[in-house]
Length: 191
Image 1 (cartoon, rainbow, N blue to C red):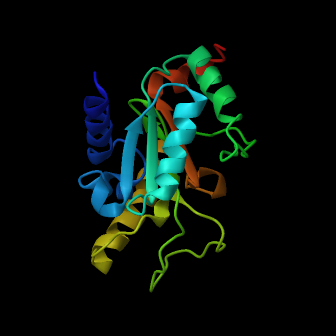
Image 2 (image 1 turned 45 degrees about the vertical axis):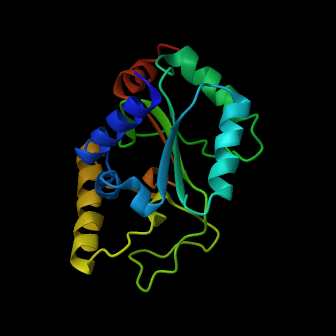
C-alpha cells in the first residue's frame, strides 16, 4: 500500500467507529476541516522530527497523526520507542501500564495536538491551560446536541472496549495506537 492508501484505510477504520473516540469517527470523514492531518513515516528520527516541526509551523494543522505501517511486531515497536525518546520535542512520560485497548488501529500511529486548544464558549470538562488533549480538536460548526451525543457516546464506547469507565490514565493527551494483534502479543508477554 502507498501512503495515500494507508491514510485512507486508517481513516476508514476510525470512521467506522472501531476506536474508542467517536469524535475521531466524526472528524475522520473530513479531517482537514478539523485541522487533523495524517502522514506516513518510516521509523526514522529525522523524518519524524521533520513531520512534527512541519505540523507545528503549518497554521492549518492543529492535530497531527504519524502512521508507522511497518511497526508490526514487538521488535518494531521497541525500535520506534527507542527512536521517539531521542526526539527532543517528544516526551514519553506515562509510566503506567495501559489497561485495555481503547486506542487500537489498523496501523501503529501517534496522534498529538500541536496548537493551543480552542477558546470554547462551553467546556464539558475543565483541564489545565497548558494541557492539550487530542479531544481539543475544534469541532467547528457542530450543534450542541451533536457534540453532547459524541461526548457521551465516546464515554460509553470506551467503557464497552475497556470493560470499565475511563479515567485520567485512559484520556488521550497523545494517542499512541497500535494494531490489535501487536497489543495481544504484548499482553501475552511475547517480548
